[in-house]
Every structure is written in C-alpha cells, then in structure tokens.
Image (cartoon, rainbow, N blue to C red; front, side, top):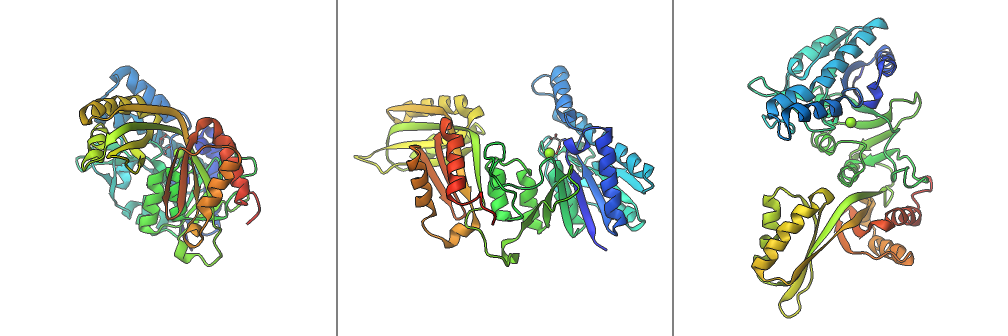
Length: 409
Ligand code: ASP
Ligand code: MG
C-alpha cells in the first residue's frame, strides 16, 4: 500500500461539479489501495476576489495579519466542500485547515516559510481508512496567527506534506497535462516531457514556465519528494515525472526545453570609470530598493572606462532607472539608457554539461533569422539571451526546431 499526496489547483476545484470530479478521483485512488492525503487551493478566482476586497477596505497596505486571515479563507471553504463530496460518494474524509493540521510557519505574513508539520492527525485519518483533506496556502505561526505562503503556495504546501509524511509520490493535478518542451500556446509543436530533472524544472520554473511554484520545486529537491504533474481533466495519461538526475538510467536529451520571460527590462550605465566598488555602487542601491537583478554584464574597459548593463523585472523598470540615474551622476558615468521592450529566451538541459557547441548552435540559429542578441548569460545547464521582444515568438520557435524538440524523444 502506498501513500499518495494529491494536490488540486484552483481551476480543478473551480465549481461544484469539478469538486465532485476531484472527489471521484480521490476515492478511486483510495479504492485502488492507496492512502491518500489531498491538498486543495481556493476555488478559481476566489483568492483574487479576497485580495480585491482587502484593498478596498484596507487600502494599499492593509495590516498583514488581517490580510492573511482574509486571503487564506478560500482554501478553508474548498476543504469542507471536498470532504462533503467524498463522504457523499461513500468515502470517509476529514478536512483540516493549516492551523488544525499543525502547519507551523515563521511570522513573515504573505510569504511565510514552513517550519514544521505535525503529522499525527493526518496519519490518524489515513490509518483509519479516511482521506485527509488539507488546506493549501495557509499556515499558523508560533503565536497562533494565520499566515499564507505566497501566491501559488498550495504547491509548496503539498510538497511539504508529502515530505513530512514520507509519501511515495506527490501528484500535482493542474489544468495542463504535464511539463512541455515550451509553451504550447506559443509553439504548437511543443511536446509533453515524460520526465524532467529537478534542476531543469527549477530553471524552467524560475524562467517563467508557470506549471509549478518555484518554491515547491526547491522544496521537493531538498527533501527528495517524487513529483508528478498531471491533468485533473483527463482520465488517462501519466503527466510528467520530475526526477533526480542520478536516478536517471536513460540517455538524457541534450536540451529539455525552451523557456522564456516577457517581463524583462534592461538598463545600461554608460562610460563608467572602471575602478573597485563600481558594481557595488550601481547595484547596491538597486538591491536596497528590493529590486531583483537578473543578468549583469560589464564590458572589458577601454582607457579605464566601461559600460555596465543589467536586467530587472519590467514592473521595477522605472524605479531602477531612476536609481541608476542618481548613481550615474554620483560616480561620474556619462549616461543611463534603458529598454523595457526586451525579453529573455533560455535553453535548458542537463545534457549541456557533456556536450560542447550548444551555445554556438543557439547563436547561429538566431543569427540566421537576423535576431540580434543583446545580452547572454549561461550556467551549467542553461543558456539565456536577451532579445528585442518583437522576436520572442520567432526565437523560441526556431530554437525549438533547431534542437529537435518537436521530434519524439
Ligand atoms: N489560492 C492561492 C492563490 O491563488 C494559493 C494557490 O492557489 O496555490 O495564490
Ligand atoms: Mg496554483
């Protein structure tokens, strides 16, 4: 008998009929001989509606404690409804809020981190042949305040519960049937991957593939939780298994996927005097303003003068540009230019480690389409380029084809 943790997202529990459908799936898994703990999100749109209400009554900066108390309630509603639906099908079920299950977090409201999970009550339900129905997204701090884990946090709840229960697998049911070689909306030829390694999934999650919350992937990697992403709307299909590379016996594809991010902006500080402390002088104030910097490039200097470029999220563009302009005057640089119409395209694959020439093939492919590369960054398993946003679709498609991702593996 295996122990399975199943997580259903907002669209999967979007209305009464869908909740009934989830109940059927859960009961079927249980009748197939598994112990099942289920984590659910709020019904689709619910959390957004609560956020909007909080803004209306609490203004732009509502009290964090009350904010969390409010936006966590969508999940409380879903657990009770799902437990009822399971009972109606003749199954046994018991619902638990974050507080009831002992999901202890730190006190960082709206982005709390899980510290421990008391599993006794969950185990008791499972041992008695019931389904434990657990609220995602919510926790409780030491002082009994309700906390939330950040938007999309139910994925992380599920993985944490799976780790705490030492579950055999954590199944994430969502509105797509797995992880794809690229976004099928942009690349019709994108294929579903049967498996993908944790490292690759981490890169893809951080690069904008929104299948899983990145913290959930990190958590699963750390605690070695086997994850499977599946469709909640299709009965058939094995989804995508997220594996540990060293467990992988099969030959690895060189490239697993092409990820992209539309929300990039680039800032260049021009003719910077090249001396110690310059990178810090520019990026220190950016970090102090809580702005995340992604790529950073400093050119070779000529006559002690260099250009310094970096990218930020588009939402932070104006703020970062303002800061860079202040710094520029201070350090005696010539000027600041920026562009918020750029995007990032990245190729991800653990096979890059053992293959040379991937980067040059990528650059040639882009050159043949006349796509100018504005910035490049690499890691062991990823190559990213910044290009004009008008080339996004073309770049992703030609790379997808050039690296054979449209061909069955
Ligand atoms: N309901 C929360 C949200 O919408 C958490 C989740 O769905 O994972 O962000
Ligand atoms: Mg979600």
